[in-house]
Image (cartoon, one colour):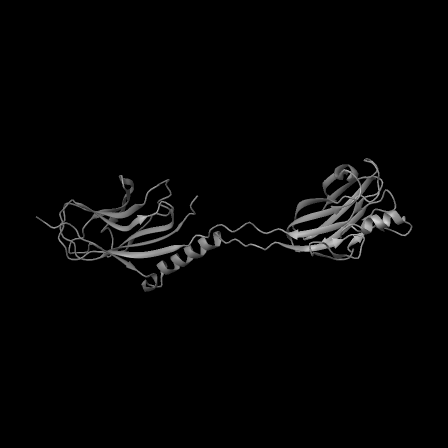
Length: 341
């Protein structure tokens, strides 16, 4: 009885492969996949702490606040002519609530403008009602870069009285880096005690998949075969179901060249614990020309598998022939693993 086909699977470091199409394809695939998963992250930091209307200083938490700057319009409080009681009440406050800038003359607006790098920011506005005695005596609106963020703000009402700090934070994305804060009163004067601007950290980058590429040869020798039989030769075993192939290529290389060319076909088979899962058949016709025949099964496997599987090349030899001489089947594969959920 004739001996069945025997094969040897040899893994080859890609540096031993010719520097032609194979090498360039692998480098191109590697570059493409890494570029697709490149994510840039920027750290979070407090960029500005400004005490509006005052000389700045250090707050109880040890944070340093810079003097009032970058404003248009308004006056500072306490001001010349304010009562001793007002000055004493404000002096008892922590920085940055010890001073404030208010819109003046009445009915006019107040603004602050900053220039930062383009990006995402958190803007914390710090308020304090200095001297009103009832709700409805001071009402104003706030906008950032022209977008309303507070309307009909009544500090006495939201703070349940005067001389009680009130903070509010707003996310801002600016393509130009410009940040403009506008306060417009509808009753009385608008007031602002402090501005804090923090850079927003980018979300943590996703797991960057490591691209793996392998090249191998399934070689044949001077071996008799049984006509009409099919031999499945595994070349990648225990493949994780998380695998996503970027490139998977099979090619015949000077195979089955005897006095009479042998014809047949080659197929790619995916098999698991329950047998064959998927097969791409008759992909390469053997012995049909003197040139290499290439089959590109790009992204062959993207199924919802839950168990490891094997990849095999199935080689069928026509029953008219029974002898093979030399040659090989080359394979190359590039893949990455998707993160676990």
